[in-house]
Amino acid sequence: MTRTTPFDGVFTALVTPFNADLSIDWAAFDRLLDRQLEAGITGLVPVGTTGEAATLTEAEALAVIARTVKRAEGQAYVLAGTGCNVTQTSIAASQRAADAGADGVLLITPYYNKPSQDGLVAHFGAVAEAVSCDIMLYSVPGRTGVAIAPATAATLSDRHANIVAIKEAGGDPARVTALRALAGPEFVVHCGDDGLALPFYALGARGLTSVLSNWRPDLCMALWQAWARGDASRALELHEAIVPLAEAMFVESSPAPLKHMLAREGLISEHLRMPLMPLSLSGRAALDQLIAPAMALAS
Image (cartoon, rainbow, N blue to C red; front, top):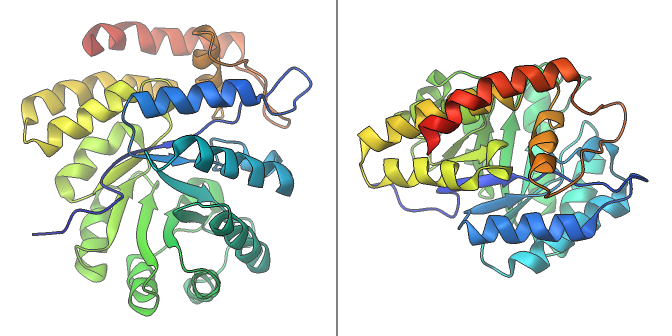
């Protein structure tokens, strides 16, 4: 029997709400955090891709992480996004996050410079040696141009006790089997695509790092809970409702569609920092077309 881990469940890849002047809207951020905690979300991921991390200053990123830690007060695991394509920068950001109280850090594959697998071992290994907190690797080849090979993840988990998990966002459920075969069942696999959560769970993934749960934490948690209690029929119903909603979150570059939906419910504004732009009129029409039938299934 695989032991229970702190990663079992749904983690929300938090948006960063902005005011009209593009400063961080802390009141809105607090509302979002409280809403997540009230829904019983398992984990919170500040300063990730969904949080527009690439547009935040070092001071802003640290403030978002510290705010999340303080607001969560141990009610949810805090996994801070600290990865980038400069190893020393990733190390420094990870150390700051750990000092601020984050339970773990999420390290994206270095982007643009497209390192070899040996380079990935060296990069992630250097961060692991510099911090003692948990590390979740993040493989998202669609954004970075390179995937973390299952053998590379296995090597890293063997060499570094604090590299304990991977977020898989390459759209391939078969990777779960390959990772479990090479890294072992104790190495945690998280699904990084909302629409693939159920097939990932069925193959052995222990949880989901979700975009959709910013808006619908209830649905994402309900799917996880149905699967965990063995209610395959209910899990399938929820999966079929979630798939079009997950697709809607990417009708244009994320998190523009998500911020649009949160704004429609009065939770935040739609403001994004350039080069991202608010959802276009055609994007809104496409989003509405996907959401309308799905909401009936979700009720």
